[in-house]
Length: 415
Ligand SMILES: [Zn+2]
Image 1 (spheres, rainbow, N blue to C red):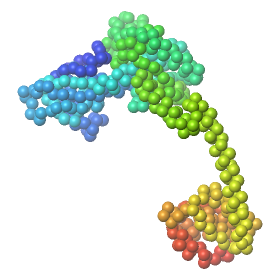
Image 2 (image 1 turned 30 degrees about the horizontal axis):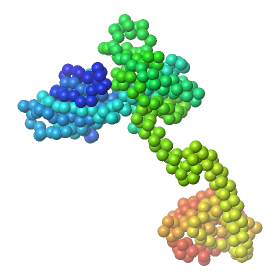
Image 3 (image 1 turned 60 degrees about the horizontal axis):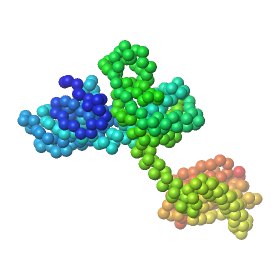
Image 4 (image 1 turned 90 degrees about the horizontal axis):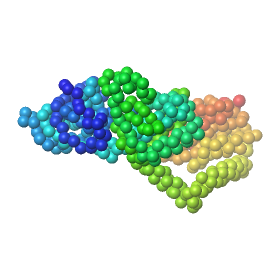
């Protein structure tokens, strides 16, 4: 089979073209798209970019305009293309219904999606090129995801370095420079200093952004840097000894700004403050919350102390059910109920429907055998250090009471 003519190599701006189907084959089991698509069509020429070099494949549609005389396939209308790949110079368009060799088709690329990829791909060149020029580091990974683009750099960049690159990259955008694509002859390539230099059979395509980058690349790019729109670094992290940059360009950067702006305005409206004061208002809210938590904890402790004082200190067994106490409240309550007393305390918090958190403790008895029996009988899960066992149990209050009330703990009354 002859190689597919790659229309996107000469122009990234072809979004609609006519072609002839040269082959359409079933997707085999060893193909990673097996089970997702049934057929893969080959065209004499295509503007669909196959995935590669960090750029995802194009999406779009193929529509039959003239059926081959020899076809036995049923009439087709519009077939969606969501995956495209290249093997040995042949480009395969993955589809769910067959075409026949000889069919004339009209193809459309999802231009919104493609242009977004072109903005990001060119933006990535500008960023990687500038990092290479100013810091000598290389781009060792590039991924254009659904929500953001990642660029992996093989060196550590500080926030100051990243700020400098972001400003320089946006200066390059604002100069609206021409992005040049050419295929130099081997003698020219030998003396040319460019990124991604490696031995490849056939023409090497060099993408240049004046003052920012010269790089070998087969992807699709915008014609002028102004079309990239804003280049925004979202965040960065240390990654494999280097730096991973999360970035967005153009339309996606605007969408991200709109989304975050809305969040900020929502937060400030909830806090009845201006967006520029939201940060301080949240800090104040956090410190108020911490103070209230502390006050609440102190008050709860005092309440449990008073409640414990109201319970007969000579009781050998205390069983209490509560509606919604936190595990930390159970601990507080039990510490007051067992302090200077000869007893075993059983505390439960919850309800019959959802189950109970429980705590068994004592300062005078060894409660481990008691807890083990309890866990076994009610298939409860629990554990803990020392003489305090906490856990959860799914059982009825009436069943638990029926078991605990007559229970004689004298047998385990040595600690
Ligand atoms: Zn590129």
